[in-house]
Every structure is written in C-alpha cells, then in structure tokens.
Image (cartoon, rainbow, N blue to C red; front, top):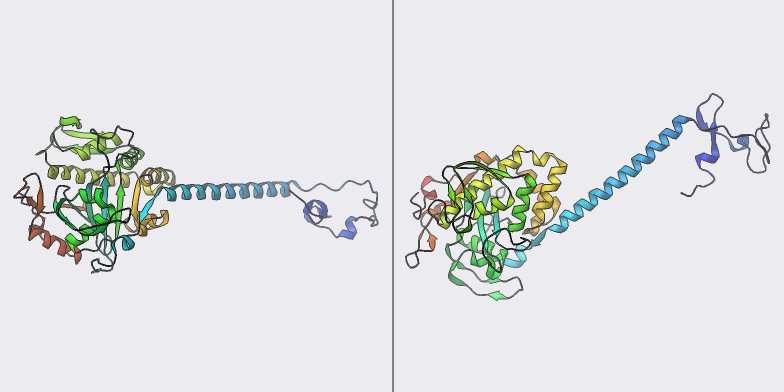
Length: 390
C-alpha cells in the first residue's frame, strides 16, 4: 500500500507522558531542520524514533481485519444474491395476457397460482417412470390469501378437467385460437404458464396476482434440502405401475420418493387423478409444516440452501421475479399456519361423453369462485364434488 509523507509512520511519536499523539514537525526534526534540545534528530541525526505503542498497533490490526471481513462478507453476500437471483425465470403476465383480465375486487387479498410442471429438464432420468417429452402442468392450485394473511385456502384444479382454452400467445409469440374441451394440463404444453393463468382467470373470474412454477428437479431438490418430509398414510400404497410402495403409517420421504408420492395415481385410493389430488394436498401441508418446524426461515445457512434448491427450477411472474420480491412475499405470509390452511378440490363431475375426463360442476364451482373473489367464507355446499360423492 502506498504511504504518503503525512502517514502516521512519519508524523507521530510517543508524547512526553507516554501517550500516542501527533508531534509538531519542527520538534520532530524534518529534512534540513535542526535537532531538538536533546539532539535526537536533525539532519543526519542518528537518534532512534520512539516506537509506537502496542495499543495502537493492535487497534490498527483489528481495524484492518474488520475491513477485510466486511469486504469479504459483502462480496460473498453479493455473490449469493446474484447466484440465487439468476436462478429465477420470470414472465410478465400483463404483457403476455393483455388487458382482458378480471378486475381486482378486494385490494388487500392475494391470489397465487402454483403450478407443478412435469418437465423432465434436469431430472437425470430418475424422477419418474415413463418417457414423456415436453411439459404439462401436472399440479395446479389456486392459493387464496385473504386480507391480513391470517389463513389461506388452496383450490386444486384436476388436470383431466375439460376446459375452454382462451386465445393465447405461445412462448414464441404465436397466437393460438380458442379451443373447447381441452384437458386443463394441456394448456401449459400448448402455450406456457401465462395461458394457464389466463385460463384460470376466465374459469373463475378471479384476478391472479402471481404465479409460481416448480418443475420436477426443483421439487426433488427442495425436499432434499429440507432433509426429507414426513407423511402419514391411513392405508398402504401398493406401488403398482412403477409407483411408490409404502405400508400404512408414518414415513420420512426423500426428494425422489416424495415426487413419486405426489404423482401416485394407481395403487392408492380409487386410482384416479382425483384421488391423487388428496395426496398432493397432504404433502403440501406436510412440507409447509416441515419448513415451519425447522424454522428454516430463521437460519441464514438453511435458508440459503433451501433458496438455492428452490430457485434453480423456479419460474414466476415478473412481480415475484427477484430474490427480494420473493423474500418480501414470503415475509408477508409468516402469519399463515399450515394447520389452519384449507385445501379444496374444484367441484367436478364426470364428463357424459368421456368418462375418463371431468367437467366443472355447477353451481358449486360458481359459488366457490364467488366466495374467493369477494374474500368471504366458502359455503359447505360449494366444496362438494359430484365426481367423488363428497
């Protein structure tokens, strides 16, 4: 480090009483100056300069170390932020959907569409049986957060539901016309997440404020970062068609088995997609409880590990498309207790033409959407689905 003539090394010495302090240049003897009364330093003087006190050397060393640590911490913090921020992909919903969107009814409430994509990207071939190209919205939940964020309601939309896909732009900007009686999960593969948002908005009349999509690899990584998730089954899971085999009781699942758990269709319950929704909702509650129990949000090291795993395969709307925005949103949800979160399946009935498909059941679905739209309690009858008899 370059030192100028006014540095402490050349302009300071011990004072008469032993304390550290500056000494007048004339008294100390400068270039060409006369020595002091004791002849300790003039031109060509040979007197030694009094040593700096040990206290000053220690102070300077501590300050230097603090400066290095601060710089190192700032660098690591910036690297971590940039790394996590760079993991997130985002989509501008207003640009992708346009102006034809439902109005916001209750300003303080929030509606978030959560999508689980079955993309195999980054899955290393071990996350699912079957060779499937492309991607579909394997799981879809509209999560309603009332004003005040004291509770939440998650409405699952069955993937086999026949819907009308509105006119949308695909991810290449090409316009796709309206299509009737298409499977809900096909909307994603045809036109991407923004079209799924538009479809849900037209089905429900509810403004979707945000969407969050996690693919297979991201889901597995998040569970493994937690160290697993505990689930309890009241009856065995047979593992048919390559699925997960579990006895009735409590199990700790790693990422790969958790993925099989939420995708199990055959070998548990009635073997239908509607039965699988119950497993997905059960697992979501178990994962949220695990995060809360571990106080993952209160540990910087664990939070980084979770954030790194979760953001690697994360796509959001542009409003949540940064680490700070996601953190602020998560902070606003701290008051939501998983044990009080209500999970509902969108009321559906079997299609009269194709019994392998379902259609939205009315008037139940209309009543359900209206209650959420206006931030009101959901009537019991609006939760009943003719297809499941409940």
